Amino acid sequence: MKQKPSYLPKKYKYSARSGNLKAEAVGVVKGEKHFPVFEGDVVFKPLTKSKPLSTPLFAYAEVFWSWVIDAYFMPAPQYQLAFCEGYEAEVEKYYDYGTVSPMIYGEGEHLLNLLEFFRKYPDDKVHIDDYVNYCQMFYDYTEILESDYFQTHPAMAEELVLQILVSILKGDQNYHYENIAFVCREDDKILRLAPMIDHEFSTYFMFPDSMPRQMYWFEQLARSIQGDEVQLGEFDYLTNETERHLMEKSATCLHKNLIYIREHYPEVCQVFLEKLSRLEKDLKEKKELFELEKGPGYPETANSDAYLIGKARYKDHDEKKAREYEVKYSGKEKQINFEVVNSVSVYEIKKIIQQMREILEK
Image (cartoon, one colour):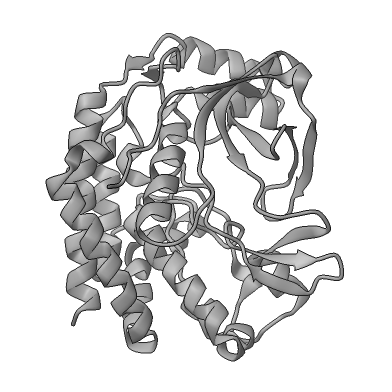
């Protein structure tokens, strides 16, 4: 009998940390992270004031999907809701609430994400210089799987394929090339594929303060899986040429990923579909397992536009713009209706399961 995840927040004090996880973000978006580490090698991952569309449900999504992935698909580090008293006072761009999770690599090991890997080991099939980390986009992984490395390391490729399938299932709107990493030795020898982390941009738990926006982005997820052809001029409303091109590609690329995987990795598809059936059965018969529970004392209001204040203040260093956004967005928080979130998310996940099965079983 599977136990549902706990939504009881863990409590820590920043002053009691055993150290800090110091890591420079290697990718399109630069920055250093100094997340506190506590006894037992658990890392506090705060919600960020400048992260696009951030609400407390980002943390709930981490807890929910880390449990689902571990319970039904593959081993995954478990997230828990958490407070870190004194952290926001020390590092203003972060809140003092978020999640904690165990370290995913050991002493003498480090991570090497796909962007770093293909920059270091260029491959003609992977156009890594064209890669852009853009929030609310879906990514094409067919060229990654066609690369020499994954073609000559089939077991590693199969692990990646399963991660890609799970990322589609969880409606991840930010599953970019920096989310997937190898665990390496100090000499950069690849040891294994890192487990799945970073589940916050799950479509089903975004925009608890706006049902129309939530429905729109769910439709974009379903549309990309279905692969309906982009119509001429469909995205002309986007004046930025790069963004328009990315949206056109994003609109069908999940379908492209699924077709490629179906044709080249039938055994992985079969394993995934079997695991998916067990999940679907429990979603129907044990719905209570998948219901988020309000964490005692955890923030229960959402404002998915408030990040613009933090972006202006902490990323753009534009205090004037930050104050303008404060006037526009402060005080616009809405109470999170967990009953609605639970009902909508379970319905939408079941719809995506049906879509994926129809494509993978053809």
